[in-house]
Image (cartoon, rainbow, N blue to C red):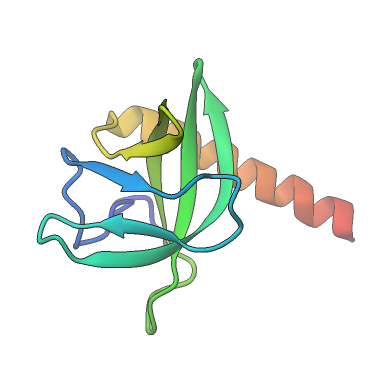
Length: 110
């Protein structure tokens, strides 16, 4: 995956996006700047510098399954809030950690 468009075209990285409980294995619904809901699957949480980052892939038909978005998470009461206002350097580092986790998982399955 090219790391130049982690948010995709439909998402405003300065907007807070609310999602479902991260422990729910079902789709996470994210709302774009136009108020449209889009289903995503949570692939994993990546801890980095004391915060957790969700790595998600779109479940929409025709979406590139190799393209992920990375959003910072925070608890707000019983809900998890996804935030897209993340520094580009942090996104790159979190993506590198995610790739390493994927490689480690692939190695353990071989």
